[in-house]
Length: 68
Image (tube, rainbow, N blue to C red; front, side, top):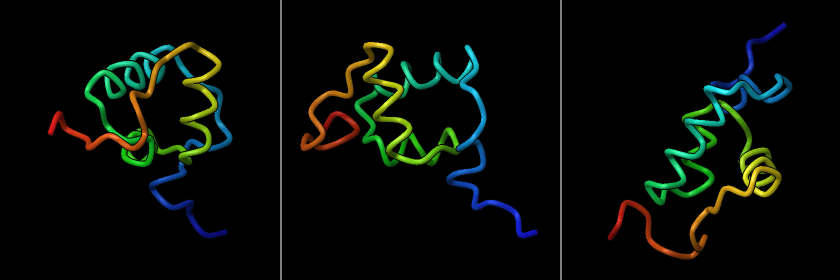
């Protein structure tokens, strides 16, 4: 069986408190969901879903990242 791509290595795993903290911190940095997904090893859809479930705001998706 082939290893999962780095970008979705945690796709089927439950979210940990550490990952939720990291999601919150990365969202506060105004990173796009796709970049957050890469950093956490989860698909972009999972990032969007968990942010919605937990009330984490992913500041406008059409806004340039990194505070520019």
